[in-house]
Length: 470
Image (cartoon, rainbow, N blue to C red; front, side, top):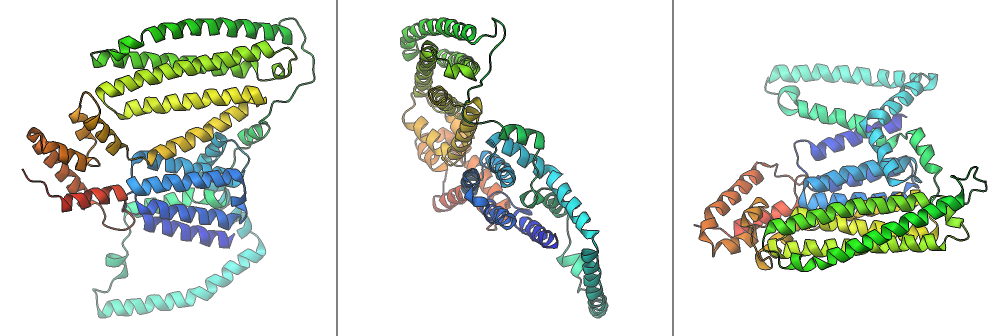
């Protein structure tokens, strides 16, 4: 336990060095290496398990994005990656969401409480108690002599003060230290909620046949099969008619003349898609949760489920096309990119549901796979310079230019907007004001390696080498 305490103390001091009065930058990536070192100290063979390897990859990718761009989204995903790694360092075979939940519980103080309990328990034993007394007696006399000599030196020169000038600790430093002692023990003494952990470990990725008979007509397997066939058949027919109606309306979206028409069309399609996909997946999860996977004559039900998923994929394609029309006419925005993200994840969910039926996988498998997929897709998206992409598309390809929106995205599209304002003099004053505001914020930031990030450095270098005059 003393060794673990010294490791924890060192980790807290390093955390303070990296983040005290600093903003997100290279310190995030450096802290990732510290976190991995603590996990390795706790258990040297931790990185052999695939789930821990995936969580380490997510931590490094999200940390890299935070170091490059320093954005709030990347930092938020970085904290999620920390929770995930903490949870998996305790129990590697959990689902991602359960592991992240355990990591969050560990980080809010439960791990530090457990570590403190172990420390006090070990301190009550006779060998540890005697060792502490012996170390105290060894250090007591040198400490007192040092204090005496410090008093003599201070008497000789009152300007020599170690406490008033050089090592004054402010409230932020104290709070950061306390925070470190609360959450960093999670990497050395991770906590797991036994109720959720045991329940998740008991869920298999593959459906197994239950060798038992149902009692009663309503609970019979044949009755459930017939009900599923009737329900999926009706829903397939209804969705097929709806798809035909939507297809006939595509020309209207292609020739729409106002943003409100296309906006309403996209919003309605997305809302319908959300409800439809949730219903589709819920029905599949219900009917293929147990023995219907092994029912000898379930071929028709499986075919109807496949058809239901394929028709939902077609609905997804129509919504994607409508959103594309909207973007072609009125430009790219973060919300419209978010629609694409939702459509992509929805398609992945439908395909994974198709695989679940074909391979007789369990519902737990579906949730686990899609959790990992969402996690890594979000991390990869944070590594894309979306401000530059949005500005480039809207200035070169969009039929309608919302320049005011592009100015809201500054400063990371500054080079593109500077080229644009050379031919639009009415925007020069706004451009200069936004540029100066960024420079003022940049100069107020700590000019240290911990707070350095590539995006801000790149824009500042561009401003210094490309002066803009009225």
